[in-house]
Each structure stands twice: as C-alpha cells, then as structure tokens.
Image 1 (cartoon, rainbow, N blue to C red):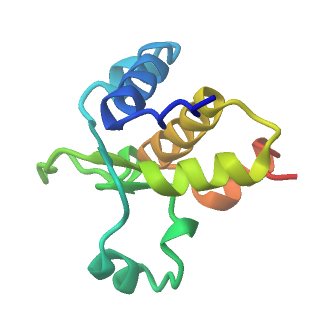
Image 2: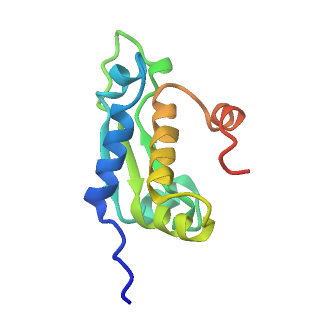
Length: 131
C-alpha cells in the first residue's frame, strides 16, 4: 500500500486561511491586512540573519511591525506571516501526538500573535503546547 503524499503548499495555505478566518473579533479584523504565504524551507540568508542553525527549527515567521509598536504618523508596509512547509511536516512526523491540521493552525496562531504584539515569552505563558 502506498502512503499518501504530503499536503502541498496550497493545502497548508487553506488551513492557515481557515485558521485566520476563525479568529474572534477584534483579532479577525486586525489580521486581515497580513499577507499569508507558505514556503518549503527558510532561506539560508534568513537562517543566518536569525542565527538559527537547523532549518527544521523554524516552522513559521512573522515579518512586520507589531500593532503595539505602530505609530499613526509612520505608515507601515504590509506585514507577512510565512509558514515553512517542510519543517512543519518534520515536526508533525516527529511528534506523533497532534494532527497536521492542528499543527498548521498552531503555527499560524503563534505567528499572528506576534502581529498582535505578543512576545514568545508571552505566548509561552498562555500556550503550553510544547510541554
């Protein structure tokens, strides 16, 4: 019996969009401006900039200025959330205790939390996902 192929980037994007669409008010409106993309792997340049040695360690990235740091006098370029498909698949395969859909949704919510101004420490205090 042949294993099913891993979901492609479009399937990841659909789950991420559905996750964003389910955000409650006021987060849904605040998240609408963020561009959402899926890439296979983080680039070597990005890994170097972030000082991360293993590309599998980066499942998602928020790029932009968090809402809590914006000024009305300084227009911001659009923010972006990027999910990295292969690192998410690798983590999912290693964990064996969560559905792929739930993991994609979790990474999506985590990255949007940065858009809303939450730090990794803030998120960790509320979300004990990795324990």
